[in-house]
Image 1 (cartoon, rainbow over the protein chains, first blue to last red):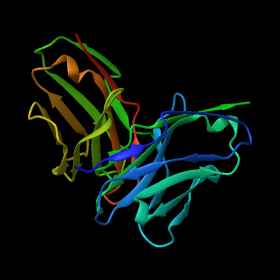
Image 2 (image 1 turned 60 degrees about the horizontal axis):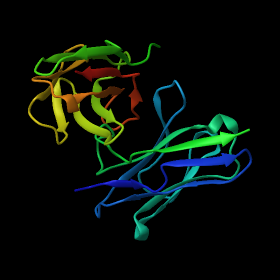
Image 3 (image 1 turned 90 degrees about the horizontal axis):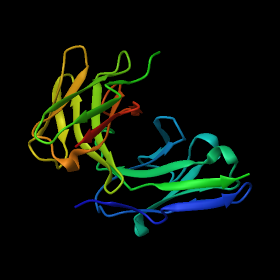
Image 4 (image 1 turned 180 degrees about the vertical axis):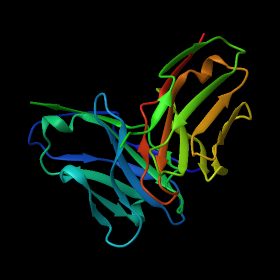
Length: 114
Length: 112
């Protein structure tokens, strides 16, 4: 069965530190990859997505992610985090086509200390 | 534009009962998906509907069912509730299945 693994359950960083959140998936075919974010008290929202083309994708608020097919990975990065990045981050994958049918990782909580 | 609206916000039921949750998508959105979120299992896909047709179904027992109406509003039903059905049920809508999802706040279901 397909699955998505997020390596860290909770990450604590100080402001201005660099961020990398790991995501690995277990599906060998063509996949679409997503990162979603849930800020405290807000709805889950799309941060960025990869369908094809340049494996380095840029999203909102300075986030980027790199798709490495050989490693089945789609890690999320940000060079310098801010307190406002405190949120829960979810990696997700689907087999193509519909964006409504997603397999999510269990999420990583990011706490940024001011 | 109003967001995805889910009602009720909170619900308490007892084992064996059934429950119906409602989702009103963003105006103009014709695709609706449902997810179950629990601390142990995370977010799990339940169903996806587009133009009143179920396009995809997740790996849940037959007690979980859903439908979509001609105005794109969707309902999901859980019959014979079990304690393990306690969860946050999230609805998401998009203009079409190949477009970005917009999530609602969810319905928090507690089964006692």
